[in-house]
Amino acid sequence: MIPPEACLAEAAGTAALPHDSQGEMPPLWLLLPFIALLLMIASGPLFYHRFWERHYPKVSVVLGLAVAAWYALAPHGFQTLHHAMQEYFSFIALVGALFIVSGGILITIDRPGRPFTNLLILLVGAVVANFIGTTGASMLLIRPYLRINKGRLKPFHIVFFIFIVSNIGGGLTPIGDPPLFLGFLKGVPFFWVLSKVLLPWLMTLSGLLALFFFLDSRNPQMTPPPTSAKGGIAVTGKRNIAFLALVILAVFLDPVVIAGFPSIQQRWGVPFGIRELILGAVSVVAYKTANRKALEGNEFNFEPIREVAFLFIGIFITMIPALELIERYAATHAAELSISRIYWMTGLLSGVLDNAPTYLNFLAGALGKFGLDIGMASDVSRFAAGTGSPVSGDLTSDIYLTAISVASVFFGAMTYLGNAPNFMVRNIAAQTETEVPDFFEYIYKYSVPILLPFFIALWLLFFYQ
Image (cartoon, rainbow, N blue to C red; front, side, top):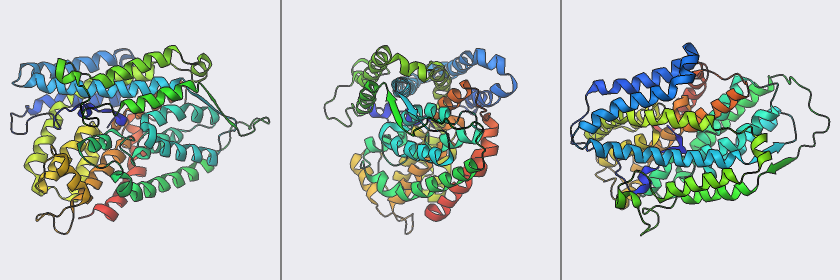
């Protein structure tokens, strides 16, 4: 889930897991606020739109506070809450910075929306996502994508953009999606992902692009193309490209990456670090100095990031009990974690939970299967390189890491909850009065019938056991 683009608190050197696996587990009823929040996110815009639109911040915060109160009174609960807030501040600082900075970059494509043009935008977005994250690529390209298709936009245009640019596209580098970045911080070599995930990425991306092209070719051109269109591309607000580079560089400002880099989190006990302060400063300066024409052309406003900020603070807190139960399961069932079980459990849970801690929990479980420790960078590097295990048959450890990496990133496209850009793309499209699928329609009409066959094919080809 979120994203990238998203949960980077591990970069600040916090613990890999949200709770001591040998400690007391939360009661099952504590899952109810999380379940209630998910159900309300799904049903609110559909069945009680006015109430939800006005009160979703209060609902999210109140449900989050209900769980926070339990942990505040539980032994070691404050440490757990502190960890969750570190994750949230890292998440919202990065996502917010990418949203604000990209909002000041206006890309104008001087050609009408055609199937081949749209195909190129999605392909470029998938590639670029590996350099600026899925959030950055989504925010940079969604507005020009909507503009050139005005008059012929259908729900599938938005859905495939989310599938390709907001999720699967960022599966090749640690910068592309947060789980992969956390793996890098734990000891996975930077270019390991590219070498192992490239073939599943190419197969899935090619299939989705081909299906999109087929659907878009059957979609009529509702408005005639302008006779003056020359096919050029213009960029307004180029100054913000430098700010975008600063945001990406700031991601690596961490003691785990740069030896001796100061950590104010550890020194002062605050739930944010120097990276988050830099991202916040860049966001403010980028917005204050942004090209006004670029902001106006993008119809920039803060509603998409406001929605993400309020909903995800509730999600980050209410999902703590669920993550603790996953952690306990991974720790106590390491020997039983077959490659198939790891692939499907990591994927399905990443669709509704934060995919970064889900990635780490199952990575820890898989490492335990091979007698290795997630806290040791040398063990993680050895795991990525491929080592044998007496309980895994002929399978070496690298295939387990490949399954975890693919599942945590790709399955983020299964629901709007799976990644923060999903919410923002949906919100921006809805503001242009584009027909956008509701939560349930997105799942039963698009992600399950379209994505699930691809994920089953990947399982059969690469991870079946």
